[in-house]
Amino acid sequence: MYKIEKIVTLSVGTTAQTVQVSGRPCLVRNNSQSAAVYFKDKLTDGAAADSNNGWALPAGAETRFPVMVMELSVVASDAGADVRVMILEEC
Image 1 (cartoon, rainbow, N blue to C red):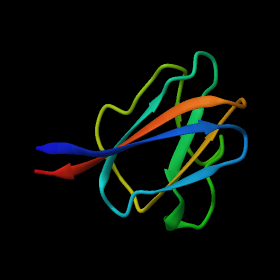
Image 2 (image 1 turned 60 degrees about the vertical axis):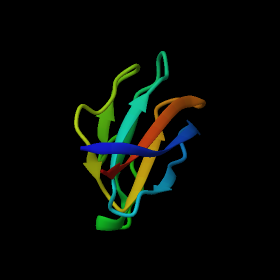
Image 3 (image 1 turned 30 degrees about the vertical axis):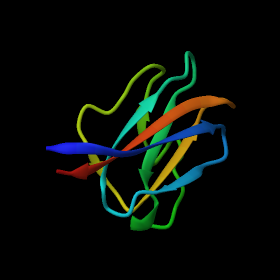
Image 4 (image 1 turned 180 degrees about the vertical axis):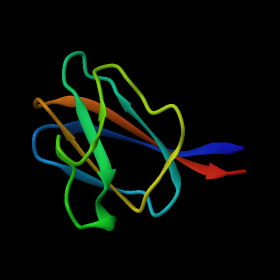
């Protein structure tokens, strides 16, 4: 079982941003009405997320299971995409 440790709110555009997750499980939600969001673990290969190497979240979608990464890289197809990263902690 998990509890919410914190929620990180991002305004993401076409330049990738990195969230330090430090191996904790997290959920990613794309609150944008039109932009796709792409995310991946930046630590595995040092590359930031983009539309070719990231996991895609369409507008309004969220991950259905916790993702465990060290450095979550997030980028969007348009400027100003509202993205929430819920970092979890085991109870």
